[in-house]
View 1 (spheres, one colour):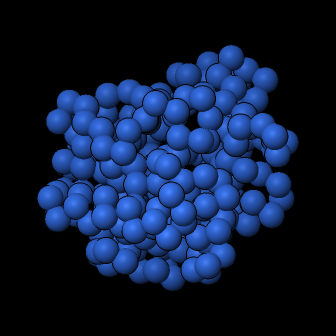
View 2: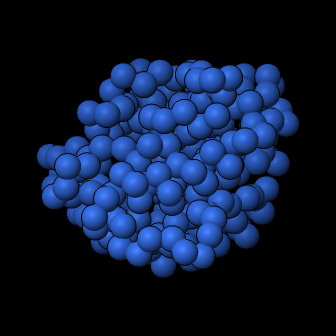
Length: 217
């Protein structure tokens, strides 16, 4: 499937989801390259579609500034979610990254989708081994998840961004290929999986935070 066909197919998936689930639908964004392409596609279908994002205390400042600029520039119908509480563990990403992700990512995401029937994700099957068996339409516990970019390659993402002048997080110019929390994101070689730089050097290297693998409802 060429890039033109992939774009058309992705738009069909988004359109069907919007028609079926509005107003209880949202696009999730992490402000990385896949999220930006997904947002660009989704806004062509529904300009006022809800956009949700989980923000941790460890997001790079560059990502936060970029997020603020895009929300304003694209006038997004935007909501963000953070971990609750003032007495959260310090340095948990060093000692127990799984628990850290549970507190700072998974739990806020549960709050984000609490009133939704469907959410749209920018995951791609070629990002790493953990995503190779994902499906374009998934349903868990009554919550539908749409993955319109699932069959896209990393090259497809950058090709689309170039063709349609999609703004991108400046961190990519520094050599990063997959973006997450600052302490848990590293630069990887071109011949490695994109997500190899996530939690590098730990048992969690290249794996998942839990948002895409755990029950959210």
